[in-house]
Image (tube, rainbow, N blue to C red; front, side):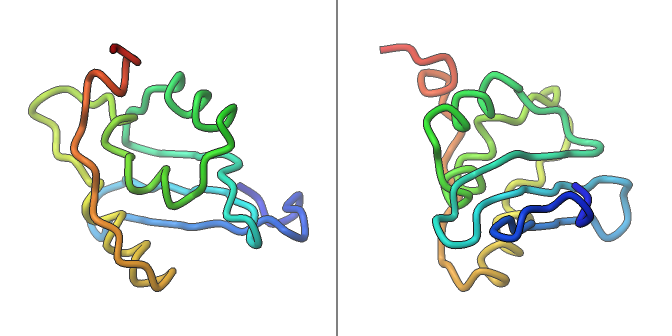
Length: 110
């Protein structure tokens, strides 16, 4: 996301891996914390999950906490959700724990 086109109320959370070419940026409204969008590099994500969260007007906190549901990397790839959440907690002053990946929740099964 570019700061040139960023709305006044828009804020960004950035995470970048220390050694790998892997990063994530989440845009959100500063006052309401409403999730506005995400950009990843080196991490495969399920677009339908983010579309659902956008339509449900989820918070940036929800997105970071449930990020594992959106991760689409193959089985033996490393996951970075805990590292991302740890940095988010430090930056935002929160104490969230990551939600476990849940296929029923991902595919909206009852």
